[in-house]
Image 1 (cartoon, one colour):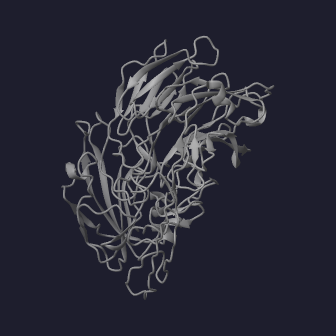
Image 2 (spheres, rainbow, N blue to C red):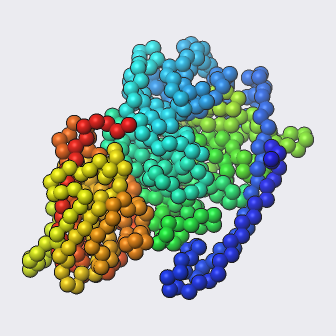
Image 3 (cartoon, rainbow, N blue to C red):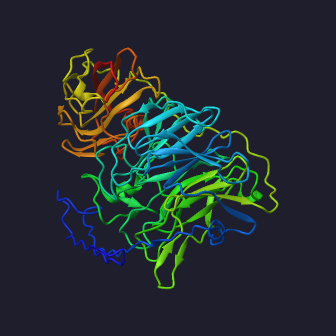
Length: 601
């Protein structure tokens, strides 16, 4: 057993022989590379300190000149995420209690006069308002409810019931984007591992009724705090770095999060740094993964544990605060000396982040005995309607209100935030890239007959396993195949891509049922899989909206006169189509149907 305060020396040495390149797999990177790594990490958990006197407590908190910190509410047990309704009422979720509380300041004195529970479900964590509607997210579920005139919530309606099961990071958060869509964060189940569910370590995007859920961005270990920059509409989020890489590694990442991009985890981090603890899927090197990943725009002190993030759009603070972001840093356990236990400000210039500065400090103390203690672990941050900000401490059960008692001169508010989410382009479904001189099409068969229902094991509500495909009649000179499976009946994106595979060896005439979803397969050797419209790669099965008539699913096989398209794994449909042009010798397809009569789970 480890003591609560001690330093753990973790040494990892991986010595790999330089191996010849003829078919021998390597441990890291490309053939011929080796790893020799020593990692030193610390376990240091400061002691929780409590100050019951509000006046004494707030004098210990350091803040910029002109700012005032008050205790808005205390004895709340475990306030986590904060949100402010259109009427200016403050709400806090309590994960350990499993509820949402309303904190009303009826007389406007800057202190909550009443604390009332307004919703209750196990694991409740994320909260977002959209006019008179509230959205709440627990581990597996998303709920919605109407907000009554008195601020209480109406009956909860569950709109999503199948978010991935939790592991190490169970704290989902939610927001309504400028495009009117729901954005839901799903952390990884682990510190660093190959996830079996592609929705882990992502931000998901769905309609307000919970339908049309896709992966918006991936490779995000645990992005709890995210928000839209108010002048450009760009989405920014802070991702928790990997533990056990050292006291100074991995920095907490500020990412500009864009649709369809991946952000490195678990294989690379920071500025394309290689994680020495874990190998990529077979067939891909760490350097390939880094090349396909997007680097952060800023980094902050390792292990600070960024939580909720909010851009300041009020008029009560000095003008240069407007458009900057506040982030609650809960604090470290894996660093000596400790980091976090503070609120930081991210400075933005011309809509882009340029640096950090500390905003609220003093929560972390070094005591006379040399040990560290803390007055709070900060989790929630939200901007009030009066321009103040609210900060939640989930360890001592306090919500603070930060106001400015100097002279503020904020400019007028910005215009409407633009919708910067680029929808996938509409492209043709009846792909015909074959030269007119071709006489016979490729004959395609599957585990279902043409124009018949796709069996449940191949649907998203079933096993989500790719169907068996076999084909014959490829012309002489065929060197590789491309497989495209998509749904032209989908409302958006159109067509909805369910499977994209390329560089399938020209000697292949059949793909077995239930192929892995890895970017590169070993059988067939070298087959690459591209991006599907769900936001992952590999096969994803039919899941048309309930009530829709049967959708049609086109499984197309293309014979090419080149052995490879020259694309990296994870390519998108239009890039594959462009690379195929001028190289298609023949094509064939089989069309299946699928209709959902009942909801999954």
